[in-house]
Amino acid sequence: LASILREATIINAVGKRIVDELIGDDDILRGAVISIGGVPHIQLILT
Image (cartoon, rainbow, N blue to C red; front, side, top):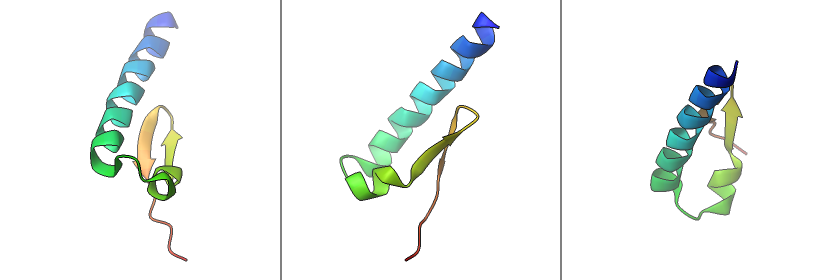
């Protein structure tokens, strides 16, 4: 179980890094990023 959690954390960290690169400090876009099963998914929210 520990190794699974560790892997999920690494995947999440890599995903967050990618999100940081793509989005930067844009809080509105950052708010649209959610994490599903440890993998970040970017959802486009159309208003």
